[in-house]
Image 1 (cartoon, rainbow, N blue to C red):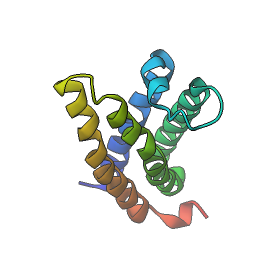
Image 2 (cartoon, one colour; image 1 turned 135 degrees about the vertical axis):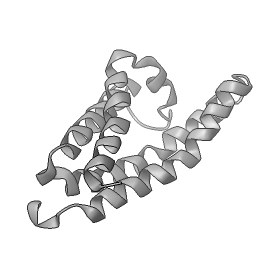
Image 3 (cartoon, rainbow, N blue to C red; image 1 turned 180 degrees about the horizontal axis):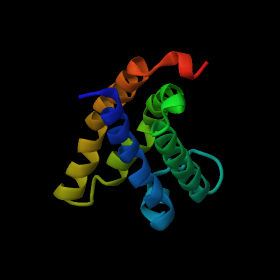
Length: 127
C-alpha cells in the first residue's frame, strides 16, 4: 500500500475519535487518570484537538512527515489512559473489559503505522 493511502488511513484513525472527544466527551473524561492535575475535560478536549489537528496535517503532503512523528508520540502518550481504562473497567462485564484489553495491543500497530508513514514521507518538504 502506498504512503498516501496509509497516511489517509492514519488520518481517519485520528480524526474520527478526535471528533468524538467533543461530541461525546464523558467516556473520555472517565479514563483520564485521576493522578493528573486539573479537570479531566481539559485533557479530553486537548487530546481531541491533538488528534484532529494531527489527522488533518497527515492529509497535507508537506506536513505529513512531522504529523506522522507526532502521531507516533501521541499514540505513546495516551497509552496510560488506555491502561487506566482496563483498570477502571474490570467490573464492567466481559464485553467492555475485553474491549479495554484489546485496545492495549492495538497501540503497537498504530505506532508502527505512524512510524512507517513518517519514514516513507518526503523529509525535504518539512525542513
